[in-house]
Amino acid sequence: MSTQITALEKVVSLYRLIGCPRVDNGIFTAEIEVTSELKCAMNNCEELSTSYGEFDELLKNNSVDISSPSEISEGDTIKLKWKIATNGSVLFFNSYADLLENHKSVFRGESLDQFYIAQDNVLSTENGENSRLATLTSVVNLISLLSKIAHYHDEKTKEDVFRLVFILTEKDTHKPYVLKTLFHEEDLSLNAIDLSTLNELIEAQECNHAHASEKLGIFRFALANIISQCPPNENVFSYLLKHWSILLKEYKASFDMYISGFSFNKVRTELAKAEIDLASSLSKVMNDITGKLFGIPISLVALISMLKIDSIAENVVLVVGNLLFSLIVSGLVRNQLLLRQSINIGANLTFSTYKVENGSYPYDLKKCLTRSEATFKSQSRFLLLGLWSARIIAWLVTFIAVYIFIEKFGNGSHFWVDFKNLFSNFIDYISNCYVLTYPIIF
Image (cartoon, rainbow, N blue to C red; front, side, top):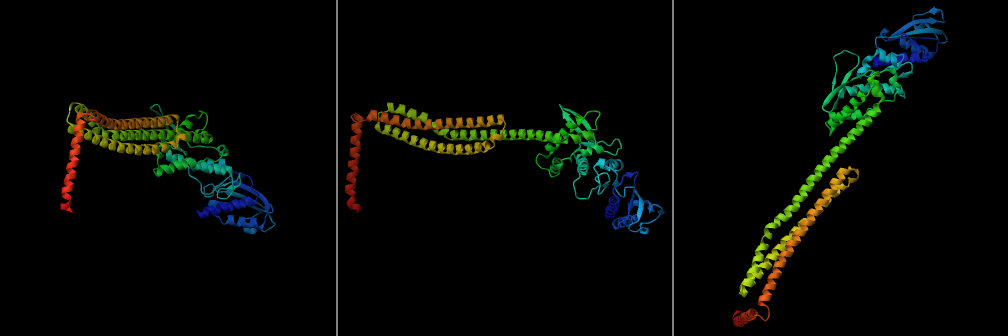
């Protein structure tokens, strides 16, 4: 490898020192005065094997035919002809057309290590800007990358180019489009091809990144779509090179649509799941207390019993029973109200998370988010109404029981007088017992 590079650099150095003359049939000729630099360059070329090229003619002072540069001195006038090797040992080309004609491996994405283009005086390994060289390099790399993502290679015919097949699927039909990777010198006047997107696709596919297959499928579709638009009388690959930027725009637009659809479905699914979970949580809050609320009808029956029972003791028991029931229900309702409050806080956090990206959502998704939030708030308000209703009804039963008790046994009634006498006698009895037992205990 190093010998080949060195040989090309020696030939190029000689060519540049003699003024970069025209190359005809693989030979360049010059008549020039010998300098120390020129003599050194000629000696370097003389040392090369004939497989890298050779002097076809050397004339000293336009008359003496010499066989070696060692026979010349500084100040002499010489006429030299250098015959460029045609066996591929030294990649010295008169033009890009010459390169494409003699090294068709570039049509199969095989880059050349080092070459020289006389027409542009450019050596591929030298630093410096050269638009056609940059375009050639990018096109060769493009062919190599496309060969990796093609659906398959058509190898039925033996050609110096790839026949890459890309399939365009529409309405359950599959139509193959063949891309022959043939291009011409005039195609190199285009700007260098942007390969960043294609490189990212291949890297993502090799590393199994998220959506890698979807990205590649969308790119293939966009590529096949561009190929399908090529006029019949135009070279397909040249058409692709001219419209590469359009292909990238179509791919990015299509992928953005795919991601938007993916995000829409993903967020919509998450919203639906969150809505179901929140509704289930609210429903569970009510279900947990529903069984306890069945005691309300029993309390109402107790109220009816109070109207029929004349015993003050039995009525007291019923009132106390209703009071205990109201206290229990009230406590349970308070606990469920706190639980509802916790669910509301969680729901607000959930919806606020989606609202952060609300500006980037499509209209349908915004509508879905608004509807989900409104539905939850409606369910939460209904639960609040149900819990407070249960609490009010439970206490209302107790108040009614107390009212009935007062009406039946209130101050002035026969039963109330008897009750007060009974209670007074009970207190007197307790007091007497205390007076009698105090000296004994203390």
